[in-house]
Image 1 (cartoon, rainbow, N blue to C red):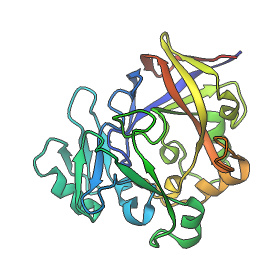
Image 2 (cartoon, rainbow, N blue to C red; image 1 turned 120 degrees about the horizontal axis):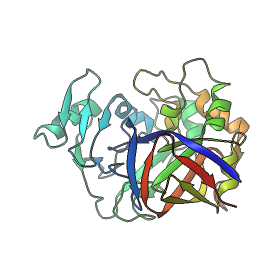
Image 3 (tube, rainbow, N blue to C red; image 1 turned 90 degrees about the horizontal axis):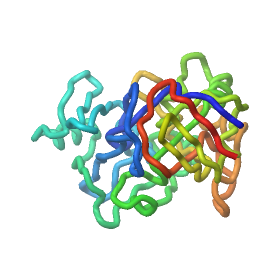
Length: 277
């Protein structure tokens, strides 16, 4: 039996903005309470803004969002200013920060899509060039949400430590790979690959079903607040854990795993985790 504990719990109230650490949170079929409940809609293209398209949206990772479960989301700008998602000037302020006209939305528009730049092309061309991208529809797996694939992203400390050993000191891993749950388990790095199809029991009530390894886009390579750009954050998993996350998807660098919620529950730092057989 594989066991461990929760060592970090995070949420990201606005899609592609920096998030926050939580001591505890309720988790249901739509994920961590308050997670990715809002997004920015590009007024020009009609697509959801995503840092997965770095040449256009990498600046979103200079902004930080907090709250949103029971209180309004708060956004902190790069200069330290804070404003509420309910502020009447929120769209104008975020448009200025993003460099394009955007609207903060709390529901997925019909047919909403985003663009995911090919990560290897981003590494080759740099951050300012437009490169080939795939268009994906939001809400196809979990209708009405801003998740790309699943409501929970988890990763083990063993995986993060293995990657960190190949990055410059202080490069950061948790911030770059944006998990909801960081788990300290008695496993080797990239054990999450073998958890697909298994259930995880977290705390007294929560049960998760692991769906697939998490393929990485260019986002981990970008500057995240004070963390500088780090291309090795993609190159390292490409060397160490290049696998096929889903049948027919082709080999991709993967870090962590996606999961859905089988049974909701409240989770806190230190809660026990058991991986089923």
